[in-house]
Image 1: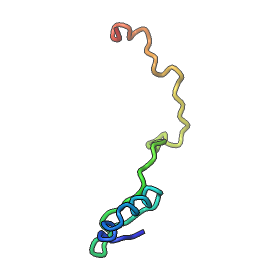
Image 2: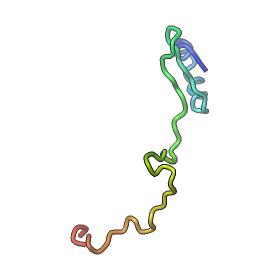
Image 3: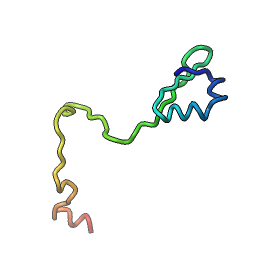
Amino acid sequence: MNITVAEMKSNLAAVLRKAAAGEEIIVTRHGKPYVKIGPEKQAGKLPRLGAFKDQPFRMADGFDELGSEWDDYTR
């Protein structure tokens, strides 16, 4: 959906409702794209990048447990 800055000002609540519902809104100024408004990205999985992006990922069950060698540092 494309709207002008003037339309945005007069219909702000309605435009924000549409954007929150998933519609991408492009606000134009002097006939040219000015800003893009859309829904907030949902928290979820981050994209996997790098050499291992297509590899399955599994974290060991006790990955966050420190061994006894760290006892002197954690007291």
